[in-house]
Length: 540
Ligand code: AMP
Image (tube, rainbow, N blue to C red; front, side, top):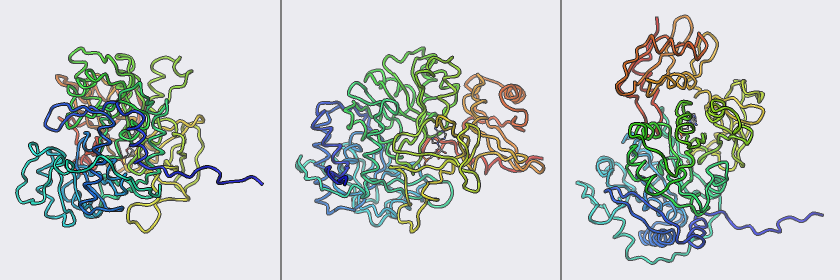
């Protein structure tokens, strides 16, 4: 008879990651932009000491296992300490997206039962507006010292982080929790209805953080320096704050300064080798680099996701600057990255344009995740690279049900993502659209992502978005929005003629609207709902 249960059953806990980082790589650096400007630097060991101080402070305030602590904050070292202190001591770290509408922010803070909210000074006006509507919050803690904590009129219980933790011990007995217990909470930034919460377990986060270190995912190690531009207020900054400590990687946190010049300077001076963010961030960075004739001295790769990375931008990073692009896919419901583009050894011998096309796909499922596509009736579609259907996902860090929901979100054990995708025989997945964004015309589908990608390939185009507009004959037809690059004067006819050489004739949009900028939401995605509201009338 084979025996079972002969191995230790140690729980996977976030406190374990912190203590691993501090004890194995104690002198590794964390560099962080303060909200008031200067750079702060210290070691993993210092971070762990301060996280334990915060855990003691929260305990003294009366918070216990299961209590929720909110944050409205940038990527910085105090936020990082909170990630570990709150979850490590069995509480729930509820990261709030500051770009939610204040009403939605009030909703999520109340729905999560946050008892303390940590915030950056930048968001003091936001706190002033919402505090009176969040009766369960006992203290608003500014992630700053006394000198940099603003007084907030009408909000009495404002503390500052440094004074809060100062009296407390550097030691804390992390509880041995069930690895399935809730560690972090993030709400979807859905455009309709109230946001829905996803409660990540310790297990999900530890598994994802470990997988994220793999060479073909983020590729973290003690040799690298990573700068997560992806916000810690949204899907755990792709678990990079955890993964860095798993691998012993130097961590560089950009604080509020996410513009091209600030990011470039940080990458240069801190010798950043890996970065992660949404395409709009990389557009700002590359514009700055091009305009000023700069080179990346240390950057090896940039990991991108959140929305589709245009091929033209992939080509720029890879060909002009020698920076590899890795294109990942994930959503609030998947803890962090679930798939990642991958150039095999053979792929790396292919012509540049073919490599860009491979990277433009969202790639292979990370170990621990399974993906498939299904048709409208839920039947599996072939992995042939062309059959499109809804992307379904399951795995060790995928949501089962939303926070406080009474029923499962799954269909036959799989999470329906609302994304339309293809998967090829090698398992490479490509997102074609969101189910709500795909343009249904004459019984066929047009991928808004493909059209946008093609439009951004025009040298005068900075950004593009496509929506479907009702049409009496065809059901829907595409309408293209263009933001021109500075100093460019390209007109509709030229754009449409250009697109006619790139896509099927029936894909060419019926009209083009030129805008100064596109409405971009809190997580870096173009808000197509806003465009639909204003322009989604009827084509005649
Ligand atoms: P959120 O839950 O706000 O992070 O949004 C998740 C959604 O962003 C996914 O369901 C996709 O529609 C979209 N998304 C994420 N990554 C990508 C990507 N690499 N390419 C295209 N869409 C993406």
